[in-house]
Length: 382
Image (cartoon, rainbow, N blue to C red):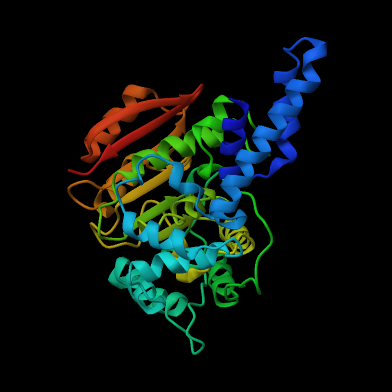
């Protein structure tokens, strides 16, 4: 059992320094005179198993392909995954693995940029072109798109809009001064996988590596449900609404079944910080990851362009949750587009949340309780 868990740890991008944390409790159950012999045997078995796994997949490719262990993505993009696995050697980076997946899906950087621009509403095409069209160097600039209605800003702490030409002017100046995406030179350093990429085994075994258990649990459940919106043979479009540090967006884009992820927030500082984390992780705009400052009550997307939406801890900080749900429904693809929205239980009752979703037009509405004090709305567009 210990060796099996060590393999799980290795598959999630972690090496053997954590091994003593697993061996200690197990060896403590054995009589003193048997501990040393059993400890040596367990260490040898675990090391052998981990070595086989590492030799087969490669250290870097293990972390970059950890999304494969999540349910919901198994049926979509199998050919792309197989091609990506073959191309990801022990020295490959996340970008190299993702590039192999894009190659398998026949998606060039120009196609990635065009698909992203085509998803936004006509009123925002010029901004999408400015931020995401290929530059002279053949790369997507990766600017943070400013798709916020002019003349007002939002105070999410007070949950109300503010009419302020001054603040709008500052926002426009910040957008104009935005920098392009910083690409990591050469091979990036080893990284930790975002919380959404961890498996249920990490939670149930009590394994921790700097993430809160609640983030692991919410993300694993949501990725499983959203994965069912992915259709074989086509790349899916996902939204991370109220993205914060962008951990869910980074998790989603690591699946070849997902072609585009739009990480959306109302605070530019949050988006800048999320982009920096994506840069450090080795992701690039050509992977299909785009950052947008937009209003949750006025999404800048054409109707029916999105396959899945993650709305994590966002509904309780908007001015009109019902209006947000109606906008999310409009953005989703008819016939299977899916939504996951988490919210603190003290903000909405389960029946209230379910009623709001049904009134907005969602079907197959269910309320989950991934952990104490949190409701998770799961619904789809018929």
